Image (cartoon, rainbow, N blue to C red; front, side):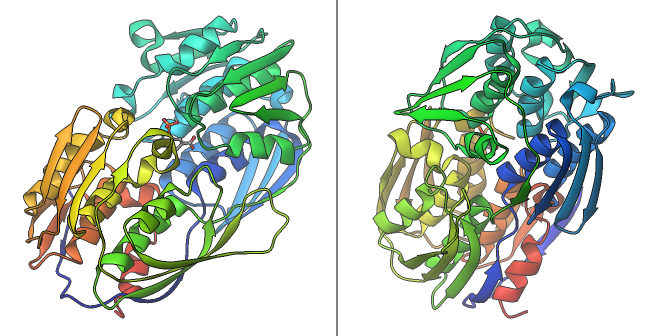
Length: 430
Ligand code: S3P
């Protein structure tokens, strides 16, 4: 296994970085471009491993996709012109690719098989396959289509009226993709609003979608019109440097091109609640996805409570928020976050165990974490467990540890942030 020794003497972080493309929006740009007939162009695409898997899936379905760095040109025959893939659609480590493709393929005209890595094989798929089957999808898979590999025979679908049992944009999006192809009007009801990139991109591609008080209404059979998509930077990637700059003494970091969609900005609310010194400057743009510059300076922090409808707005940031809480005065309580148990790893256990190795005072609960701070962290041997966000949390922890951190398995960080160490080194003045 790959490993790295992170020996960061207590130096401040200073400088400006431009945050890499948003992972959720990059996946969706390829998906919409692959479904729409004609040419879609994308700028600001994230060339992380997960999003590259999505590109490969659409190539196998017959879309021509060329990539030049973060620019894409997608020429597609459209969903009704797809070819039957000659191989399995391999989704790697990507839950978004796997779950959203299920919804897309269910209403296509091709037969396909989806499979990913050993983490994907453990992740629950019934939350997607159940509602799609209710819409008439022909889906078979391991353990009653609970787990990959899953085979999908695309065909006609009926509309659905569905109350979301979990706050999940992946589930919502898979159903919306099915609903796009259904014969009639579908309604999806969310108790807590999850990220809405799919709904926004549907509108960009010329569709009409109504969203009101957590109720989404979509008429099936609408055509997609290809457009240009400019992907903003990923606040979930920026989060590692937002946290680092807030807690490493004497730091000041400027993060440009940060996506500021309100369904994603829970981390900003947490920085505010913890008393961080930061400024958000929203860019003046007509784009459906807000973006801007965030500047963070280090200061003393205090513990906070995080739960309820804030959780879907920062679900991927919880590992680094837990680390931040180890440096804050007082107790931080994270609750209502049981979804973390079914991410790339069980992130409640992974965060508690890995930060625990550094001497953090952290206790896992069924649905969250309790952290008491501040604690001077020590060096230790940490394991990413193949989870990119655990790997980046460990690297940021090394900035406040008083000894070297040996990180086992840093390679997975390329899943969402290939330039992570380049940015970290530039902010450290290396
Ligand atoms: C995502 C939704 C979230 C998030 C994941 C990306 C998306 O997952 O954790 O990293 O792009 O729709 P859930 O839908 O499972 O909450």
